[in-house]
Length: 137
Image (cartoon, rainbow, N blue to C red; front, side, top):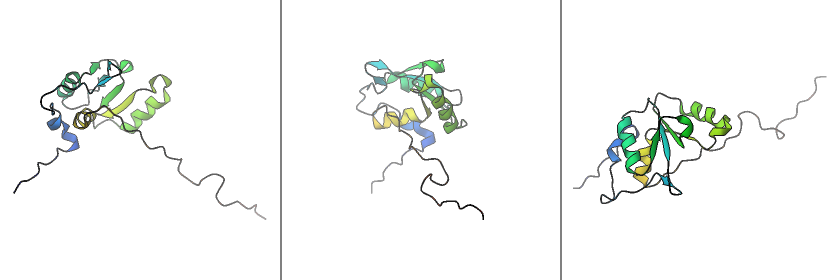
């Protein structure tokens, strides 16, 4: 009886990050002929492995957040808060904030791709369509 090998947990992406297509190097982290630039935060586990995977697949790393297209953060960093900070700074609208496992997910799927967050309306009662308040008499 054959058993399927279990997928690694999201926190352990590193097991699936090797060249997986007959040893052929793919330039996954190249867009429009230029390398994608990553900043790896010190909170990312196994930074050396992540950096090696990025470089092996055509990407580049930097020590300056402003130069990066994608900033990788570890599990101890609040991802939504960091995205909010970068969203409000107009210079950083093209900068993505992702978890360290993002690199492994890109390698697993064979492409560099960010998931767009779903747009949500503000919480509370919808404007214009709710109950009308009556004046107290």
